[in-house]
Structures are given as C-alpha cells and as structure tokens.
Image 1 (spheres, rainbow, N blue to C red):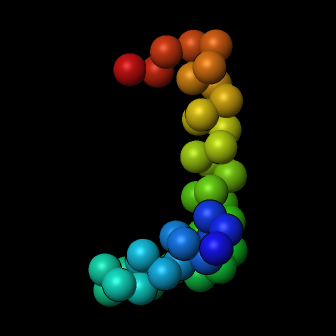
Image 2 (cartoon, rainbow, N blue to C red):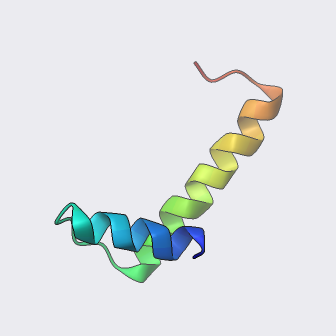
Length: 43
C-alpha cells in the first residue's frame, strides 16, 4: 500500500472526506517537510 492509499484509508476510517488529489498534495507536502528538515530543524 502506498502513502496515498494509506492516507485515504486512514481518513475514511476517521470519517474524514478527502479526494485523491488532496491526498496527493498532503503526501507531497509531507515529503517536502521531511527533506527540508534534513538541513533545517523546523521545531
């Protein structure tokens, strides 16, 4: 199961409605945060 499918499945279990496009954007945002955090501590 890829990240998008996992996110959609989790959202559905929590009764949160998101589209596949929204899930893709959230995964992309997460990936960008992880990459940025490798060189800059965001906390």
